[in-house]
Image (cartoon, rainbow, N blue to C red; front, side):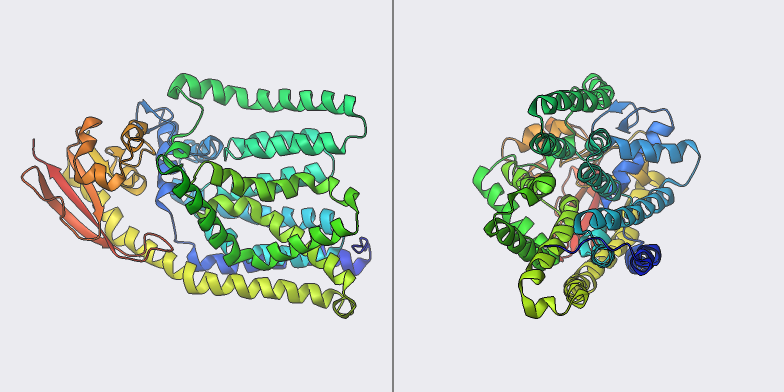
Length: 496
């Protein structure tokens, strides 16, 4: 059995002083990459700036498009614009603050699940050094807000605060569409754990009504303005062709991401499930059913839709892998006498194993990639955008492979081949065409007639012709964490 919760002053002191120490360590580690800003962040910033300026929910002013994943996040950022704050700095500071809040809340959630102050604080330490939690903190993306909401909703569910859990799940859905899946799992959890099924049906209907009421304003607005309540990012990053190949790719990518950071958690979680099941303690599963289902169903959903998975998408399961990995470790420790003699030294050693795994990956792989990416932004992509701003007529139309930084700094009308902010491009991609084929074959002209084209390839000036005249070219190292090959961005003027 798991240890009962210790209410001694020493244990309470661990919470009081342990949490600030964990957050301080988190800040110190995040400082290694504070300058790192993904291109997608600038998409949020451009939407936020347009909203604050009264240009509508749009990437290009006056052209309503659903090109971001989290409408709640972009609305929060737009408040910074209304207050005349520097949107770039405000987004990164708010992101870091929310990540810190997620760490604090994680410790209390761990305390509810593990029922021990020492284990909860040690698990919080392991969470704060997780490579993917660290990577996406302070980037200006929606990840930290989503992380905070999913932990808060899970804690509310464990404490049987159904209404709060439903409200938080609705807010999560406005940040990440995966919140809908989380809400469904909450309903299953509430129903299974309700002693009176007739009352459970009533609670289920009320929960659905509350969830729908909170989402209805956005759904109505999105359908009216964009013709859909599904973000273009969801379509652009899901499989458009090669059904089985894309599903296999999604499986492999997720395995690489999670095994890199949480293999010990996963193994101990599975071991804990086996130990509880063999002891036929089925009642132990019921309060945590939604969490276990979430761990399994979120990756399964990505596989089912053939999503091109990146680590940011899986951050939402990491708190659960860590907490229930620790719970599995405590279960295993209580069964193995030699390990049980170690007491909480064993818990600390387990956390140390996670620390070593994650920090090796963070410093050897993630930090070098982020530094290369930041250098590419500062030395190539942002200067290219500023050249467009300074040397092209206002109102010029630019076609790009990556819309964020170029759109934010150029202040020009920007369309993207991937279809994130230009959903009309998805029609071409659904025909089995890659972004590269659309660019090299000039098929983008079926959608847009640009004045300037920005191309990304493994060598510069590849599109040079009588129609496309090169104006600028720069190298960009380390676009992807697994793809460190140098790419070249070339700006062309279209001769008409």
